[in-house]
Length: 276
Ligand SMILES: *[C@@H]1O[C@H](CO)[C@@H](O)[C@H](O)[C@H]1NC(C)=O
Image (tube, rainbow, N blue to C red; front, side, top):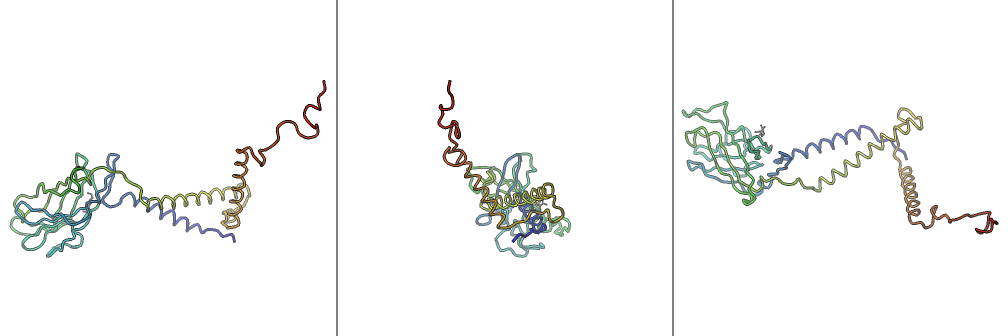
């Protein structure tokens, strides 16, 4: 009946749970700044956002995910990872790769997204520049009255019109950029229970080993506590008995707590034994 748990199994579980805890911390498009929590994920619901460039071209942008528009003629390595693009005459131009890592580098501490590694820029002679690629910086500003809000193109650089532009700065007023509470998810509760159980098991393993070693003087693998159904039932029954006794004492009813008051036993009724 008794079976030793393989230690590697526990180590593996511990490693896996630690991994999941750290991963929960950098959930896509969320971040902590100044003791506050930000979650921009509401912005990825629904369609892409459409704007117009100063020169009248169509600009399509998405937040926290790739654009869902069909693109054509994109000259980038991964056309499925485009955070925004401009519809130019000779093909779409990527404004940068999708990015879900928030940064708070700006002076005001607003959440930012940086899209980099877009299409290759061109110079004023029309030559493609191998070392320079399209990039976009989006600053999200908290505005509870805006709902999802919409992006606004603040600037595009270098100067020289839509065909030369290769870097964009976008401002996005939205309620999603307001600090929020982290909230408890069902998954979070499950993980909490799982990790608590794991910690208790490890504690049992550790204390059991120490007990077996120092009190029972077992050594080697004999000192590892064994899990067995009979043993577990025994401990449960023991705990139940203790709990019942404790309850009985508190009630002052039956059990050990109900000792009669006053002298009992050989002396007979009180008063008889003492004569002046
Ligand atoms: C995503 O944004 C982070 C923070 O600004 C930046 O460090 C990282 O290089 C970006 N990744 C890509 C692929 O652009």
